[in-house]
Image 1 (cartoon, rainbow, N blue to C red):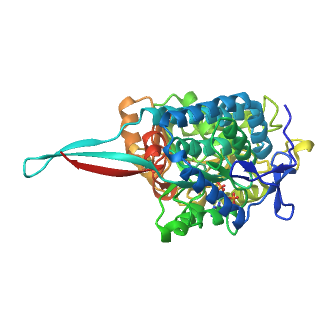
Image 2: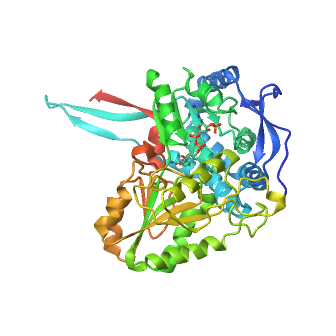
Image 3: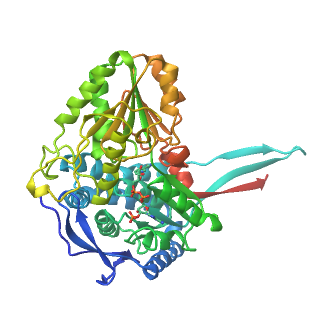
Length: 491
Ligand code: NDP
């Protein structure tokens, strides 16, 4: 398989790809090599306006009122078509991200059809609340809820799991009868445009799915969130941008769903199966080169097994294979961009300045001449840090973690919860009671015991504090993407 090199990645508005404008374009860069592989047409305010207008017209033309069974059929067909074009999606994702082909197949692209099928099922079986109400004068009323689509939804997604996170929002939005305008990250534009082809072939009416490419500030992202024609925004990205998006829509009081950053903790008790914990930690720290919002960046280890866990993790880090994304043996890709690598490297400097001991990594690795231009980074572990260190407080979003010893359960809980973020945590223990007890006390939206990133798409997903507002997943998504009207009928 080789990466596709389409000359242009284009905006998709009202059921058609727009002719690109060379005067308004930027490069799509493969971060494994640092070379441009396509040009992307940047959407200005006028294109964003046309996209929002076409979404509104699609709603008025009947998409919002289509029977649920019709919408579910289109979603299922989209899932089938993604599977038929699986290799195209994998190649597009690799060109944008440089991630290993094995991961793109097993995680990124595999989850896209699952997202469409999950919401086709959910919307098909969704019920609503109803109450028989006794009134003071001895009569009765029937209260029930009708759920209507929110309308035109702005979907803004980041670069780390581009197709997975995009379809995680597009599927429920469409299932509920909304029309969408999506803005992928400028670093990962390819799969959003590819999805347009699939959705059109699946029978989605024109204008229901639109794609605008570009940047955030003074570009497509800002034009979209500032547009008076949108009825809600669902955003996944950094806490700073999420907060900005919230302020942008505040004057028009639009609903927002914010899935933001994390500074996630893992706690390893000395009753845990150490080998299993080390393997699990290696996954939670290094998957996707640490660029998953759920990744662990803080590890608290009970003192008796601290040295053993540090040594085990260092061995795991050394066994990772950085290299050609298309090589089946590669486990670890580059960071998404040179800009992001500069940020991660600045934390390497900071860790040293803060007195951290570098257990492994802390540098730019040698991955061979042909990949020299890529944004490669060595998996990195620190000891000698504590919760006052900035590297233990700020989200780095790379393959890094600081390890800190603790003595008691209370101390571990306090250390893990000592953060402004609240997305995910992991507790490693073989004590069943302790697992339940500690997991419930984590101030996070997702609390795992003896595993990581094991997801049921029906379960709520999201975070607290700087990690976001609201939940998506399962019923939570059906609620975000609809507005309830309560009907009260005097019987
Ligand atoms: P950013 O916040 O930088 O960007 C996210 C998206 O918002 C991009 O499409 C970006 O466009 C766009 N954007 C930027 N500025 C604006 C603006 N002013 N108005 C509207 N849109 C804007 O995040 P990253 O792309 O760097 O993604 C990494 C972050 O995402 C991490 O913090 C990570 O934790 C978080 N994340 C959270 C997840 C969760 O579910 N909680 C899951 C995955 C990631 P552009 O890129 O073109 O500038």
